[in-house]
Length: 96
Image (cartoon, rainbow, N blue to C red; front, top):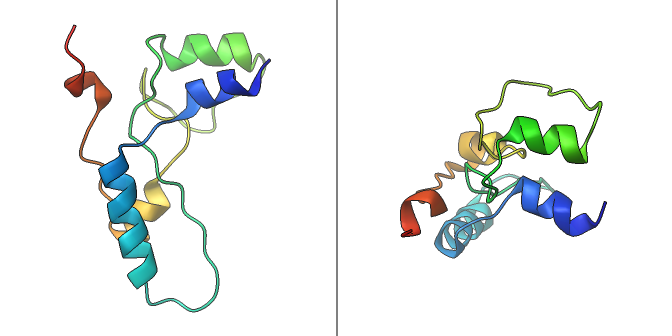
């Protein structure tokens, strides 16, 4: 499977949300090194996650329940520690 398929299944992020996350991370008072995932709350795919996992990751179990289009990568740590709040979904921005 091409790596682009994995990327398409996984995530995207709005530029303004990433910008806010970077600013907050730079102001984060912790010492040392930490990592955060910054992503939109939903995938860019029109197919539901269950179909995508069955097709591209057969036999790999879900570690937790996901909504049909919920991002497969979690920004929960960034939300909890940095206060990251994604504000947009492309599903609300794209006009058919």
